[in-house]
Image 1 (cartoon, rainbow, N blue to C red):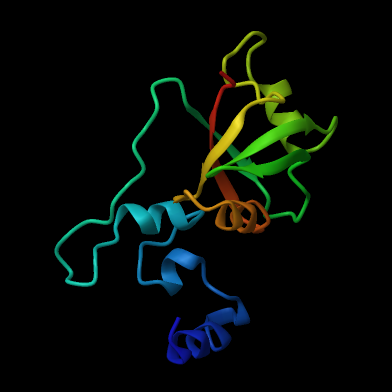
Image 2 (spheres, rainbow, N blue to C red):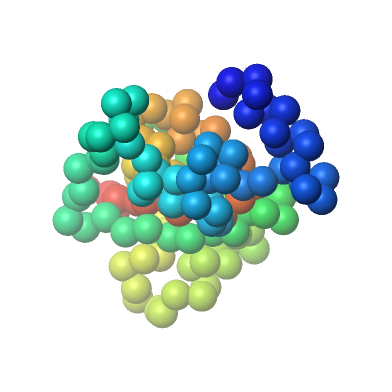
Length: 144
């Protein structure tokens, strides 16, 4: 970001930093994915590239605005994060308890995190996105 943008955060009304979407010129929303949907390339004409979707992938929505950890043990593996464990009682486990029994959207060990709020193909970016205190849109691919 340009220094002028950082100054805009510091002097925003109410003393609060605006959402990333607002700071980056997008529409205000819960996370950067809305900014991604409205962004264009440097020439102002071409939309940004998006990751090619996989037929069996799904997205979970986890609210980290309270600062609580996701509760997954995952490690970098290629361009994704491989989930080793889901910690009972944490945010992802609560997501699992909220979905219907037997749902394919239950997060389990062996699944891969392939995208978080529009970030993909870079495990460092995936980890950084998972640590942000905002609403996370986490796209996973089942094992196999």
